[in-house]
Length: 403
Ligand SMILES: Cc1cc2nc3c(=O)[nH]c(=O)nc-3n(C[C@H](O)[C@H](O)[C@H](O)COP(=O)(O)OP(=O)(O)OC[C@H]3O[C@@H](n4cnc5c(N)ncnc54)[C@H](O)[C@@H]3O)c2cc1C
Image (cartoon, rainbow, N blue to C red; front, side, top):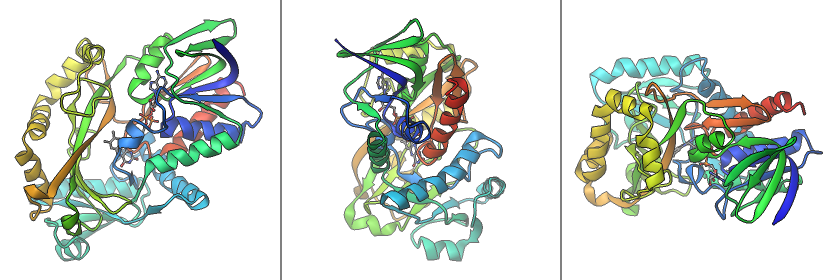
């Protein structure tokens, strides 16, 4: 079996792993760095199945890592894309209050966004709302001009190319199966390779808690997968939507509610919902993985979370199996949408970290241990924030690994 020695091994070639690895090669050009991924291409999971939105940073609690990383990440991402010719479009976004009772929460969101420093936010009235989105319902909306759209697979590809150009090794088809310690090294075994590395950075997304556990770190959280299902809007009806149309979200949940997303290729998606998945990489309603299911069901935090949020869970589950109910949620925002407009179902799976008390982790969670750093939770706006999260990890590595 081939053996190789490295200074740092990054597990996971999603957008966070590669943003980190690329910036490590810039900051520490003399270090030997490898990125391993179990798939044959980069960005195969959350990164390649997301909504492709460059978030501005409206929703997040002021002072949280999400608020500051998203604000900075939005700017850093756009600068990177300008310099590296990755296409994106700042189409702006509307968060719409359809009912009077949603207006206080809309105003609260506006306050949050402004406290987070998001530029250009304004509350607009019905007439201006209709000028921007003639087919949308609603009484008032937040207009966010600093929200955009992009293909995060392309961004990740660009990070990977720079990483390799700077001397990094990208090993695909390399699932890390075991992690042991040998003197001062950490030994990673894949089916075909043995990698020795002084330090590990865990960016394994939907499997990040498992990698941490393989290294003996139980941070008391479990990844509970939530599938986000969506439909594509029929080509002939894409003109109903100009940009990004979102509802006022439920503040107790980390998900934004079903919305309309124009993609960078001009297609329009409607969704995603958020239903419990019995497989961490379960992209269909029928996906089932016994180990993943038992992992969720055996975690006490899962049952506590279910007791707290069973009503929302039931509504989401019902909407998943009843297309009419999905349609009604969409018609709430755009009344002219019809059943025949909903084509080509697709899905992504979110790695939702849940703690032992059943709380859904709202913020990013990155922990340090001896010779290792673990990204235990990097949900949305993780892709927008990827360069800032990567920079933060590089900083932690410099101190923790004494580079
Ligand atoms: C439905 C959905 C919509 C979203 N929309 C947005 C959005 O519009 N804007 C935004 O900013 N964010 C969005 N997000 C969030 C964003 O996609 C994530 O924050 C980001 O992709 C996380 O990247 P990651 O690298 O941590 O994880 P991933 O992309 O999941 O990468 C983890 C990698 O680790 C690899 N791996 C796992 N285990 C092993 C192992 N044992 N050995 C080797 N490799 C392993 C996997 O194969 C995978 O490639 C969305 C997420 C979802 C699911």
